[in-house]
Length: 253
Image 1: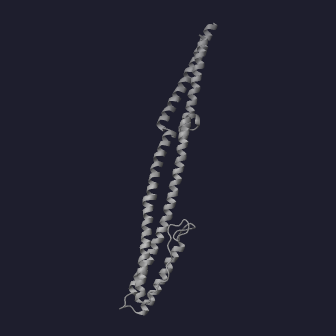
Image 2: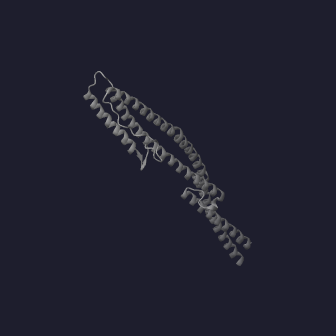
Image 3: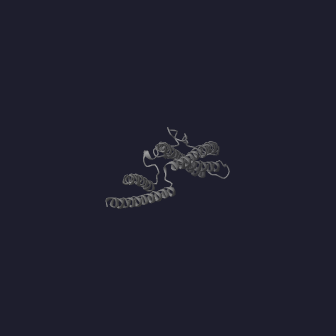
């Protein structure tokens, strides 16, 4: 009878140790927010989770790369827009200078000054538009476009002014086409790629979270259950020890 009591006590002690270990794991999961804190928690889940995390990191970097490229093209398009303003002003002045009736030579000289200023501005944009240290409009390696600088245009007589308008119209069409290509690239290539990657990132993050993260409500319920088992087991073990000592005293008498 005493032997059976000791055997039961040992079994209850083992159960108590298990309950305490599980309670410790539960506390750890609640504290860290993860149900996999070490490989022994879920070996297969850990491997899958780490593979997903590697892909999540890769996707995040790809998205940053796309954003970098998109920003680069945005800067280039801003430069082109400014160049278009220069060209339009040159065109307006050249059209005015082509009027043979009301425009005087002095007026054409003034118009020429405006044209020269805008040509200089146009060419400066080609030289100075850059993303970091990378030029964007001069046709160098890594640039977005290859735009040739404008040569001097003579509008000091009506015929030359009309020729200048034709040259500027070609240049305006070139700039407009480049802006359209950039916009299409940003919208349909960069935008589409980024959207697809973001969708994959959201889905993969949710899947990894379901594997790795703790279900807080469920784990809290588990913790309460382990605490109850631990307290009940300790109470039962203490009761058995008292009962065992009482029986020993009776037998000894």
